[in-house]
Length: 175
Image 1 (tube, rainbow, N blue to C red):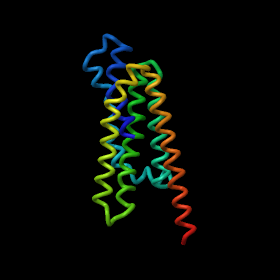
Image 2: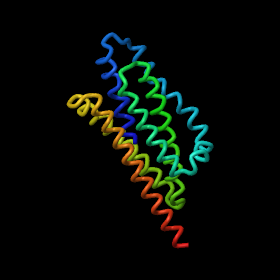
Image 3: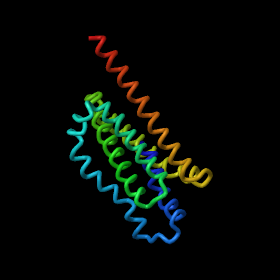
Image 4: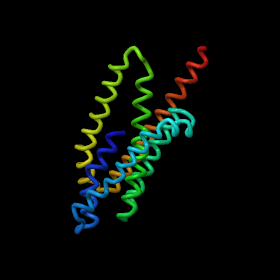
């Protein structure tokens, strides 16, 4: 997830400069206003989980919302980049906050170790996303980068949801 997030955030200024050669530094900076949704999302995480019907469904839906936000970036308009950034950040911040909470609840005995591993993988993904995305962008362009990230996020959400549904069903049948 953070791979995709960092990939977009690090290549967006280059794409915007390519699309609008005369865009100012201030305008480039304003493209990142979508980050501000993180404040609201973190405060509303529990009501969003209830609205979605549980943590697993929330993670599934938020990752797909993130992917949808990425697809909005395919529309060639500065206004749609703003919209896409808000949608993408909303999905990303919800997924991260719920995944972190879910991870911490899995085994309370090893909470510190699992949290440390989660954060290590999270930031390693972000580092790789920052680095590798530049090659994909340079070789194949913005559209291929965005489409591949959106497909990857959706596939991961389906694998996650299928896996957790299977585990929950297996645990239920054991009881």
